[in-house]
Each structure stands twice: as C-alpha cells, then as structure tokens.
Amino acid sequence: MQLRLTSSGPLVLEAESRKIGKLALPDLLVNSIAKGRQILVVGSLDARASRIACEYSTKYGHNPEVLQEALDHLGNLKASIGKNRIDELKSLVASGALEEAVKRLLILYYDPLYQSKIDRCTTLN
Image 1 (cartoon, rainbow, N blue to C red):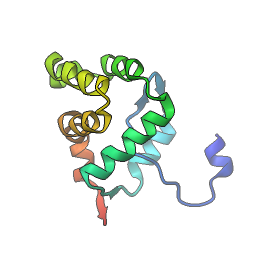
Image 2: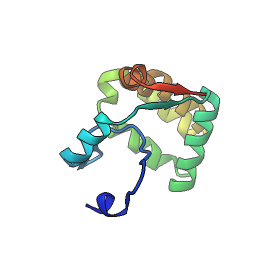
Image 3: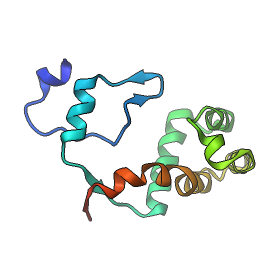
Image 4: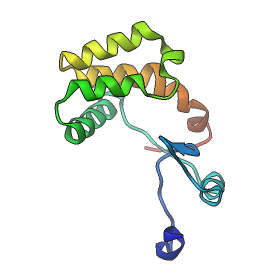
C-alpha cells in the first residue's frame, strides 16, 4: 500500500524471489515485478565481493561468528555446495578473508542461483 501512495514513477528494485528471509512479498508486488523491465547491472567479481564484504562488515562489525552462523542458515546452501565447502567458507571468514569468502559464495552459489534471471535481463554496462 505504501508503494502505491508514494510511487509516481519507475521503481528500481533488486532481484528478489517471493520470499525474502522469513517475509513473503504480496502477490500484487511479485506480479508487478515479473511484468516490469528486467535490467542487469554488471560489476566485476572483485568489485561485487568488495562491496558485499564492506556492507556485511559494516552491518555486523568484524564478528566472524555472526557471519559463520549465517552460512548455516542460508537457504539450501548445504545442499547446493556441500558441507566441506561451507566449512572452507567459515575458515576464510574466521581468518579475516571475508572478501575471498564472498567471491567463492558468489561463484559457487549466488551466480548459478540467479543465472536464469540474469539470462532474461537487458544488460547495461
């Protein structure tokens, strides 16, 4: 309802599925997103990993335990990449190599997960 009241023009959203964590988007919004123009904003792996690592460090401080625990609760990560790779990611986080952990998570999990959405987008460089 708030979007209807405040939005008078285009709305730019990050690609999301119906569920975001424990929350579910309303059907009206999901349908509007699906009908909207899909645009892919491209960034290098290094730039993406750096930005994400910075965001998480800012949000959670330099607390490896919080980030390691988050890996245990990330969707179907274990089924997708396996326990050994999750353990490797946790080790990287514990050693302070958050950016490297993010790179591997992007390559192993997120990029393949979103590939079908990426294929449907118009690319802007």
